[in-house]
Amino acid sequence: MTTAINYTGRLQIVLMALWMGLMAGCTSEFESLNTNPTGVTDEMANSDYALLVSFLAQAQRDIIPGDVGEYQLTNNLASDAYAGYLAAQNNFVGNSNNLTYNPVQGWYQAIWNDRYIKAMNPLYRVSEFVKDNTELSDVYAFAKLIKVAAMHRTSDKVGPIIYSQYNVQNSVGGVDYDDQPAVYAQYFADLDTVTSIFSEKEGQPSSTALQKSDLGFGGNYQQLIRVANTLRLRLAMRVSMVDPALAKLQGEKAMDPSNGGLLSENADNWLVALTGNHPLNILSAPTEWSDTRMGAPMQSFLLGYEDPRLPKYFLPAKDAAVRGKYQGIRSGINIDGKGRYNEYSELVTQPSEMQLMVAAESWFLKAEAALRGWVGAGDAKTNYETGITKSLEQYGLGAEAPAYINDATRRPAEYTDPKAITAGENDVKSGSPYLSTVTIKWEEGISNDRKLERIITQKWLAIYPDGDEAWADYRRTGYPILFPVVVNYSNGNIPTIPGIRRMPYPQREYDSNSAAVAKAVEMLGGPDNGGTRLWWDLEDKRF
Image 1 (cartoon, one colour):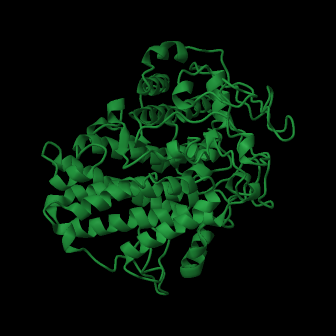
Image 2: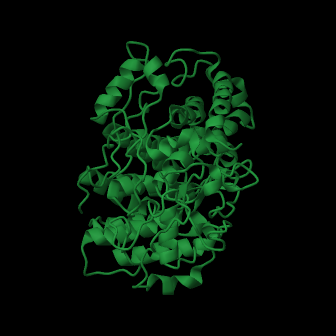
Image 3: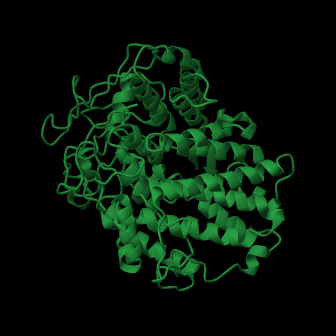
């Protein structure tokens, strides 16, 4: 497999086969993405819960898609690039594609279709089966946890989504959307259910069904409560600028130690085992698809900081022009063929597990919460430094933490592309507004905006390769400072500055759920294109 555009047709076949299997031949919008006409089967009730376990495993592996083709379309050619982590070396669709701000319908529809087929549908079926069974209430809570973890990523890419009305037919045979304020309220309510059930059961053995279903912690209630609380804190911070009161309420609830705690150590990291090779390994390896490389912003920050994580994330380039150096690609540039950048820095091999949330993230969330004055957040400096330490420890680099944390001089490095089609057009030199000047060491006597930049920059480095979360943070805060695209084929729909804000709805929604998607676009408050901001993405981001 060498091109995403060729993969699109193959993905459609795979999705159709899956759709037919899950949906039993249904045709309308209500009867396809949003219903369960086949009902609960006897197989779910077998003593080993094989089908239930299978459905939950599928949904967990779709929080971030584990399938390489789905991952490429939903993440790698979208959030991974928009977050500055990675870039494609191929000139897909004549170089007029997502990365040059002409979103490809055959690509971005996978964000919607994949998530509803592989997450919402099986989670609905599991929930319907266990909701009245007190012996399986922990499975019910677990399904809700997965649903929030998966679907917030969808909403944070597109905006209003089908959530509370899933499987509820409206008057014209479609299914209605929730706007983002409503869907976030539902996330928090669902997390209340999750933590309530797990807390009531803490100290008891988890059900056999949950032990078999939970790919991260084997049904450990305490760990799952920490995941739920950290997820709550993540979502609270997402709305901190648009709804400060709600954010504070939910953030303080998440941080209240009496509610079970947060992910605080790397042993707590939420990692889901995959059934095969990590999709990024296939996308990067020259012997596989060879479709992604190090992003230029990562080169700038990691090299400039002399960050010890650099060789843990990327490999030195092989191209004669930069051999032995770490060299990334600036996303959204003129590319005439794969060969130009194919030997820039590949990715270090990922383990066969998907990283969904790490302890470092919770410490950076607490650092920002402290800046915002939330009760229970502790000290911003301590949290910030602990976040860095936990990230370095995650990669066996804990001994490097003291020197790194106390570095007050190193800054992101200039970026030069020696193979640009037009010399210099991709470079980001000293003095450019797109080259960050933020250093590592914490400073007290500076503005909260500068402190926030420092927190988010280190958080960005720590949560790699989670492009979804990094792109969401970038849109919410404007940090870290990233490089804008050089080529913009959006016909004025997406401004080069500040860059793409969301992905559009798929054509199938307009074809089969037209009234509901029209209302969803009204909820957006702007056209259904990549230039329209989401609810929590305010233009004025000042602290």
